[in-house]
Image 1 (cartoon, rainbow, N blue to C red):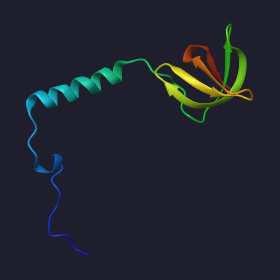
Image 2: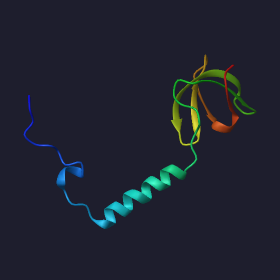
Image 3: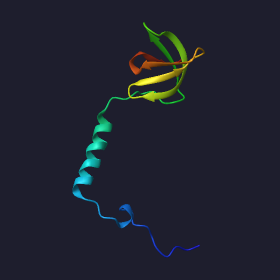
Image 4: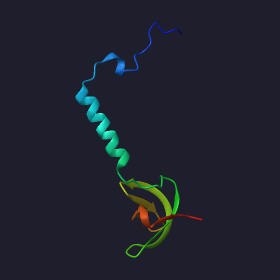
Length: 87
């Protein structure tokens, strides 16, 4: 089937204001510069924290710099600085 038109890549031809473009650019810069966890969902990690103890598990969720690790006892949230990749 042949299409008789090609969609416009610039948001389908709708005009965008300079303020909206600047706000989007600022939001992208903020999210790029905020700290985030280097571990992704599904990574096997070991967490060693004086409050939560040492646990091995898999990363199942992320909240900013914290990563939720699913262990045998449940989900424990660790700061990304106390996590190490599992050997």
